[in-house]
Length: 447
Image (cartoon, one colour):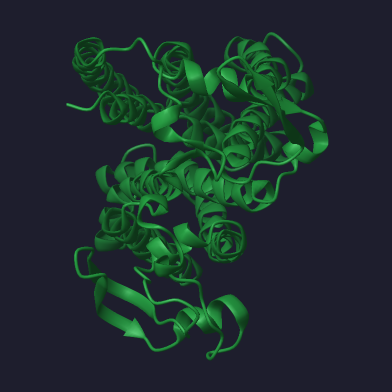
């Protein structure tokens, strides 16, 4: 077996498992801030109890995110030491900034958020809620900075070293605001807001189906549904902008997204299909010249295809094509669910429409699948480069890592993460089954 492939699988396993949790904390942070603001404004006990319940869920997810995130950083030094030496000056700056400006902010104020109920003033507690939400958002910024720099490196120069080169930071702000950063961070935020919103919608719908905690479920659902609509529609805008950036900065990746081999010709937009990589042909249902129109507003505009690149410089096409199109399909489904639910809410029928509540209960899976597929498309689509057009993935591996050591650690990581996932689902289910503390909501009652 290939040590490079095994190391990539191991890193993918740890990253994908970790990425189940940060989007939820980012999205739920928005919900917590809104609930806290509503409680301050109205003094209604429902908002306070809803915030307390969702804060407990948030804390569990945050703890899982911290535990699973540590492992990734060790792999930079064990499996990918050559890569770490190459980009350490830049990548290390982003990771340090994430720890200083995001993690400590979020974790510090989380203590007040969790244990400050009735111990600090309501406004102080609300400020801590805002700080926790900001910390979660700041954390995403620095991680996306580091990853975006790999996609579109800028603000650096190459310095010779004994066995090659090292990327040295020359302009911090150019490195941070690299060509793909703004498109990617807005797209990540929309996906995270969707993840948090649909988790709240799912649990709230479950309570309404079981006729439990109905006042809190209704209040939570209204807030989450507004966020779900905004984020789902926002994904259309940010996704289009991101694709435009990929077309400009990583044309081979965009060609893989659409299974496009022919070059300098108008390109179709595939809705579904299959890529025959051996014969360099894509079959499926497509909008004629649709890709040209989406990218350039001109159905006759030529698009760069994979034949413009050497075979060794192309990413694996079919897996990128399928993951990208599945992500788009799930995104469109989430838009439909959010808009239909909003229509039923406007008609005052949402809370009694059982089939739609069942759809919302299972909709929590949608953003998670779309987020995972989006990262799969982006990272596999970058291949064979670990730093685009500068350092190949095969050249970033640690020279002393053996197949046996990577395979052993991969199996052990898989078993540990399976146990962690089972534990997480068990604890999450326990908290959901227990539910919010009962609150008697009467007209005029405040808390």
